Image (tube, rainbow, N blue to C red; front, top):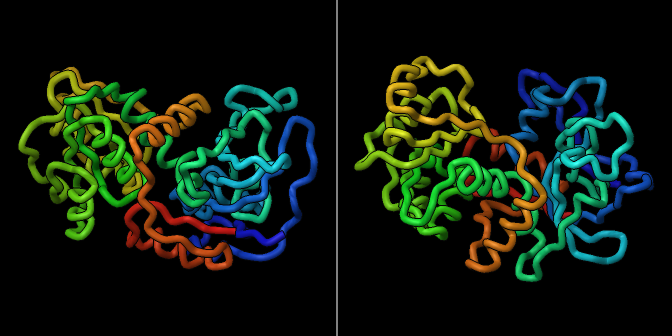
Length: 320
């Protein structure tokens, strides 16, 4: 079957390790289901995999991709929850939790396989491309906002780095939930897009907010950390799920954190229940993911390049 995969990792230029071509189709396995992939979304996780983060050389070649929507063996339209082993269903003794592409082959292929428990029905209201955006970036955003930050309608939130998949999702979800949203971006066009999505104000990185916020959604890391801490009200919550600019800020703001009793909360993988809640929220509110570009899988390199340069706003999706 045709697939996009990591053949080498840790190269000076990550895309040097990316290949497209024939790979073995997934074999039948008890407790698992094979899925005919219709659409799969690109995430920064896939770029990090090519850099060798979370993926070791002994597991190569590895089909990339953590998100997918497709059709199961019974003809049902489905979405895949990408975390294998979160509950232990469908696994043999001793299996550890992992996200697709760390240990198990991913979704950038004509077929993929996951434990049957990981399958969630695709709402009829979603296209395959829209559905494929949900399991990683949008689910991460949902968990950060509603599970970890615990914000409520009428509250306020700062989203650092508007334009990325998680940040874009947070703006849309928070606006739909009745939150007052502020966003930052170095790019003027991305700031304009953030306003169009519902942000009340879009600022340059580091610019002072007109008010302190209840929560900050942080995926940028070192470059925005100090600003994030300073933007919170006393007792506010900073939720972090990534550090694309590095994980060692020059100013950790420790004194400000303890003096103002700020909560710093990490967020990683979300649950299948949260995915189902996210889908229900989107169907009820009419919210849909922001898609930057849809490409056929044989143009995967173009999508990776667009993400690497930071030119995208929203999700990049491959169709199969």
